[in-house]
Length: 303
Ligand SMILES: [Zn+2]
Image 1 (cartoon, rainbow, N blue to C red):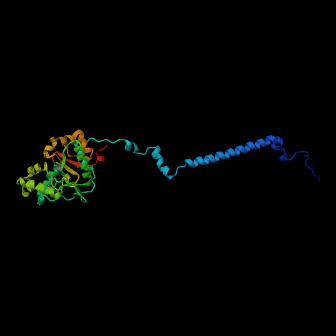
Image 2 (tube, helix red, strand yellow):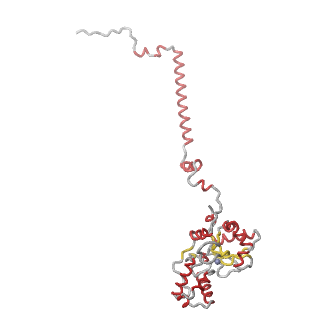
């Protein structure tokens, strides 16, 4: 068998027909140089990108702080908005008082004894609660001395109320007003002796109270005096005020009252106080008491 050799006499080998062979050496060097420059450029660009990326990469702290700087979180707008004193109707003052969780107090669970006669005491409580009186709270741990020599057993307040009283007094004094405190914390025992002695002074007996014959007398006393357990003074957050040496009843006509009650009790609210039993609120217990104020804190009266 005859083997036919491929006829391919002068065909150059594959590598010899590459472009290089067709490009003159000078241009070949130039092209290599351009490729080299391009490679260097790509390399440098890559390095720059990596470095820039590292510089931008936030650490763990900046991840957390970034939203604060750029995107306001929920509530931020409200927080930055300047707060103002809220305006309350007489009933809203009453609701505000009842809505506050007063620090260092606990609610009185069992009503304290009044006369010792259960039927008489029940009757008195029924009349009081019908007027709007409620069982209040007492301090859990000892409270602080006001240090006023004019005060007796009631020379005590809760710490926050005392701070508030100092601010209120200083504000009044700075306007030349002789605002004074005449009563702070009052224990249920002291309230009991006040109420019982007033009742006894009328000639009232436990039997009369129990039978209902003394209802109108009890009602009359409750206009100004609470039963033991039902006074806001028990909490240590309540004060009675006087203007210089005027009586409690004269307070309403004093310049001190004009100052403290002006513009929806603005001067009281500025230091965290509100009227305890303002004129116009329904079923408060006692009749309005322009001289009595309760500490609720400044935050509670801001909107
Ligand atoms: Zn009072």
